[in-house]
Length: 427
Image 1 (cartoon, rainbow, N blue to C red):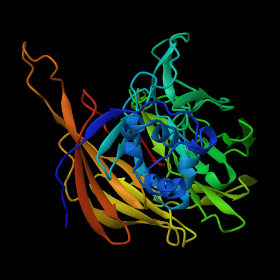
Image 2: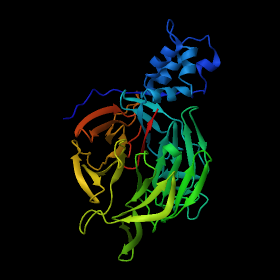
Image 3: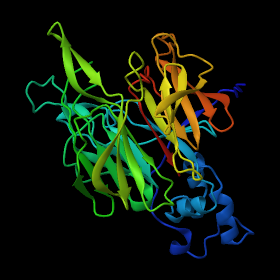
Image 4: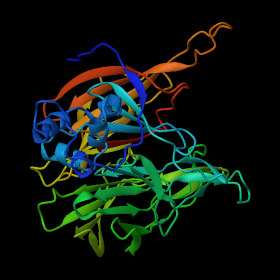
């Protein structure tokens, strides 16, 4: 059964927080008159993150409190974190990303990523979050310094958004430039793993390079280290981690993608998609140097190309829930049988010539679509622009139930949900 709450939303621009705390600044400042500061701290820490920007101007003590680095630690300790979706509509150096809070239907505008005037059209990048940081890795783009200038190139750039001071910072670039690659974060060991990839751009159906290299990023050292490469070239693949963090080791899975290509009539390039996966055993964020190959997930005549895949973590199980969105169907990957099993069907199909965004948030699956609405422009009212509604259908894997919500989109242009990059973050 689908429950549709009334559509409501508001867009706000978050003011850059300053890394200060009330206790470190002035002990005489009071958060809530009549209450000890430790009690007031607990009360205010329960306020959803999406409302922090509007509460900061209330008074000096609240401005310092909601800008404190210790606030996220307090919220995490009491399990009051806000689960948000970061939406990258286009090249993040040109179009600002937005944070969306599904609980309060609130939007938070983030500043654009640092811009390089010599490159443009960044796409096929990966975005992962670890704690109060959001990482943007690699991607495909056009470089005006290359020839021909209309040929896409991969990039090795790495950026991090810091929610403490609300700013972007460049990090050490990857050893190999790549887009459309597998990526997974290891929060407990502060490591990020990337594998495979290539130079394909969303404007081209089948073109570009493929690589097999694998790298590990050490967040503390700001350093990329090469690991043993994949058994063969693989781009357009997805990665996920098997292991609940309580064991001595875990596994890095790289699934699907494409390698070699063939041509039809010697002209039209067609990808050769992989039906399998490869697995590397990890320990303390490092691999053992060997890749184990998993057999084909589909038989002859069955689907060969994977759809959009997300992972739902489960602290009580070794293997997380791995789900794929295939058109209007959601499939679950069964490790024991190495097969995709039908899980559920999206209640409301995507509009014609449209598609769904797919992201896991707080152990639920979010299926998103952008419903465009053309508002009539008149000479007297020129502020009307193309707007729309973000419609989200949410599936709970354990309860097997659906619900839905909608919010007015903050984007003043039609959103191509198929190329949008989505990332979940908890603050």
